Amino acid sequence: ATPTAIMVGTGRGARLGILAKTAEALQTAHDVKTVVLDKTGTITQGAPEVTAIAVAAPACADDVLAAAACAEAPSEHPLAQAVVACARKRGVPFAAADDFRQHEGGGIEARAGKTRIAVGNARLMDALKVDVAAFSSHAEAAAAEGATPLFVVQDGRAIGMIALSDAVKPTSAAAVRELTAMGIDTVMLTGDNERTAAAVQRACGAGRVVAGVLPADKEREVADLARAGAGRVAMVGDGINDAPALARADLGIAIGAGTDIAMDAADMVLMRSDLLDVPAAIGLSRATMRIIK
Ligand code: ADP
Ligand code: MG
Image (cartoon, rainbow, N blue to C red):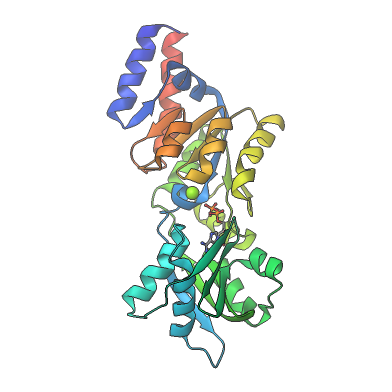
C-alpha cells in the first residue's frame, strides 16, 4: 500500500463525506463480503410516526395515547418520542410518571399515582403475561406494512395498540442493489419483530434479516457472521445500541449525524445519512487498492 494512494483515497473520500479514520479502514473496505445494516435510522429514517391506534371499549383512542405518552415521556427511545409527540400534537394531556423502568428490546413500564402502565412489543407482553389477543389482528396488519405495533397496558389489561411507521430512506433500496451488484451480501439486523422486519426487507431488498435481536446481542450476531465464513464483515449503524457491533465488525461504519458513541466505535464515518455512501465507500477502497497493487 503506497502512502500516496491512501492519501489520495482518503482525500477523495473526505470530499464526499466519507471519513476513513485510519489508512487500515480504507484498505479493509475493499474486500468486505457481507454488509450488516441496522434497520432503524440506517435503512429507515429513524423518525417513526404514529399511523394507527386500535382501542377496546370503554377506552377511547385519546385514553390509549395519554397512558402511552405518560409511560414513554421519560424514555429517549425514538418510538417513545414519537408517541409523546403524537399526544402533544393532538392536544391530549397526559400525567407525569412517578416511576419507570425500561425493558431492553421490549418496552417500558411506568407508574403514575396508583395507575400502572406498560407499553411495548409482543415479547414484553409475554414477559408480563398480558393477553393481547384482542389486538393481534390489528398488530399483524400494521406489521405487514412495516409498522411497529406497541401494546398499551393499564393495570394489567391491554387497552389498545399503537402502530408506528418509520419510512425507508429513499435511496436504501438502490444502495442494497449496488452492494449486491458488487458481489456483497446484505443482512438487516434489528430489535424489531419478524413481521415488521420482513416488510422492511421487501422494501429495501436486503438479502437476509435477523430480527428480535436484543441490544446486547447485536455484537454477537456480527461475530457469528464472521465465524460462519461470511468473509470480511462490515457493520453499518447509527445508534448507541450499535456501538459494540460496530467495534466488533472488521469494518464499523457509522452513518449520518449518528451518536458520538457510534462514531467513536466506528472505523469509518459517513457524514450524510445516505446509504448509497456505503457502496461508494467500498468502491473508493477498491479503486484505491487497485492503484496500490
Ligand atoms: P432497534 O434499534 O433495532 O429497533 P431496540 O432494542 O431499540 O432495537 O428496540 C427493539 C424493540 O423493542 C422495538 O421495536 C420496540 O418494539 C421495543 N421497544 C424498545 N424500547 C421501547 C420503548 N421505550 N417503548 C416501546 N417499545 C420499545
Ligand atoms: Mg438504530
